[in-house]
Amino acid sequence: MNVLLIGSGGREHSLAWALSASPMLDALYCAPGNGGIAKLAQCVMLDVADHAKVIEFCSANDIALVVIGPEAPLVAGLSDDLIAAGVKVFGPSRAAAQLEGSKAFTKELCRAHNIPTARYGRFDQAEPAKAYVRAEGAPIVVKADGLAAGKGVTVAASVAEAEAAIDDCFAGRFGAAGAEVVIEECLVGEEASFFALVDGKTALPLATAQDHKRAFDGDEGPNTGGMGAYSPAPVMSEELCRRTMDEIISPTVEGLAQAGTPYRGVLYAGLMLTEQGPQLIEYNVRFGDPECQVLMMRLKSDLLPALVATADGVLENFDLRWRDETALTVVMATKGYPGDYDKGSVIGGLEAADADPDVEIFHAGTARNGDDIAASGGRVLAVTALGQNVAEAQARAYRAIDLIDWPEGFCRRDIGWRAIAREKAA
Ligand code: AMP
Ligand code: GLY
Image: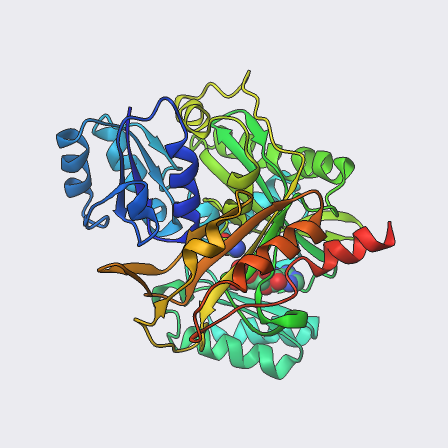
């Protein structure tokens, strides 16, 4: 079958890599793709905001499945329009994508179905929002309701900081996404990422993972899209996975089905593991980046039939097999990220770094420039390795990184630190 993959990040490179291994695949197209994806797929320039153009491309190229990587096209309803045109899609409808597109929507769903999450209030005006903050006290979390490219959340240490974040939001810092704010109790615990394929009624849990959101070692510096990840997450015991399925994922899937907006795609729950158990911080309606890279590295089963079964609503008897090893990925970013950075610097040494069969280098923001690979984004590479444990996977990933010649780039040197501390203590 012919597949069209939408997106341009490290997540999509790892999806392209897994899809390429499928005996069911004939041709793989990626819109727009990147310098690494170009080795596996035919990269095409398609304006994914122009749904009619995407539909036209699918019929011209006999596309049997569209896999949508990022959230924006999902929230914009690309799935709905493709399905209406008779094209099979992996990725939820616009209505179900509200789980990521509106924090208030998710909080209401949690309230209606008793899903554990932080206590909250929602406001469309600054004054009542500030009054709520003053009544609750700090620390407290202020969130723009809509999609804000990962920048809409402020974990405020003081009431003044929370009030400033509220003002920012209503002053239009996030455009329409900030027309409403959600204010939440600050949860305390360790964070983990939980993924499940959902076909409308059945949820099939995937492997667990943990991400590192801050830019610098020791979890210092600004929040980013994610600087590194590993799978499995040793903190996610079988008991915690079971509770997450029973208390969070299943009621969400049932709630959306009851509402007439069944969820189909991958559901990504950002969890806080509190003393009372797992609580939902947020939902995403797509794979995590860079969590996807470590999941794909560990997936032994063929990805393509799993995505098709999700789209077809037949996950019930489906099973996926995972490698027992740990996968760990380290993101290399352009200096300056997540702030301003230059584009176009050339990256050397990639072939040597990629030579280890237990290493895969997924490209997140690269472009081909003749024979060169040049940086074209903030997060640029996700250097991913397998190992018998987290320490071994980490050592292998950093050995590969040390072979990469890219003075304009940087990475954290401590990806996996929590899990390695756990391994040492065990
Ligand atoms: P994002 O929405 O991905 O930008 O993530 C925001 C980050 O803010 C999360 O990964 C958490 O670290 C933190 N966060 C969000 N909500 C809460 C909360 N209720 N309590 C504590 N931390 C939170
Ligand atoms: N790694 C976090 C995210 O994809 O949102």
